[in-house]
Image (tube, rainbow, N blue to C red; front, side, top):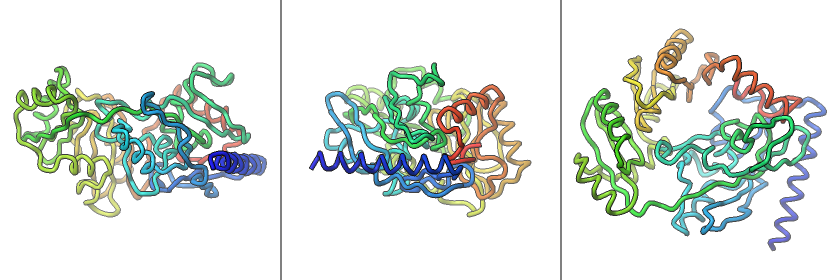
Length: 364
């Protein structure tokens, strides 16, 4: 059965290659798409849908090595279920935005959950990848570089590329053991006090694995060994957070009330700033994660002038702003790139996708 599956996957990959070569020859844009759970993310969608879900399955998993390798169309739920059997996890906690979410989309979007500040981002866990470029060729990366993009860790560059460099065929990810103990606390305090306390705690040996400030309540999750969590609970005080696991799961999957409330034509901004940045005074309601480094801003409406004001304020704080959800994308979803960085993006795009067929315009 395994040999048959391998043969089937090889045939599917060949079909993918034929279609990509034909699209390149014709200049036909392709919209690379897994489960479509993040179709709303990025600029407007263009091109003929190229469904990747047929290329699925876990290629290798050795719990003692803390590495899992899977094809792009493998459901995230399938991977997490297998890891759970061995008391392991994807430590960056990718948002589970629907049952159809695939591991290819997880890497391409590079979205991380509450544990990101303590564990690392998606790209920190990418150990290797296979990519099909605009010539329909399958390229493998992981300790290797391409001649025309020498000096870049290509497998990690794919994280957050939104399919603009090529079709991610396969990824190898580092996994981690599930913490022995977790506990959650909450404190009533203002935004200013919460940011100050979070930065103070960040400099101490505390097992804080997640934080969230919203409406004058700061919530913390502690993860680690029994003794470390117990010691932190005694040191920090506060109140026990009722149903902590459900709270953090809702925050991770963006099913928390903050993300679902507000006007349907409003805007949700993701502000990435240094954790030590002071409070950023903007119109709208904020929710703060990652020890102060990720700040969400929800507005009932947002025009071009307001978008420019948000980006200016965030840039002054040393960060950048992304229009995460919003009806009007004419203001630009992603923060404008510096000229030097834009040239690097263009060079990478030309190297992998010379005809510009993969997810055109999805990022910039």
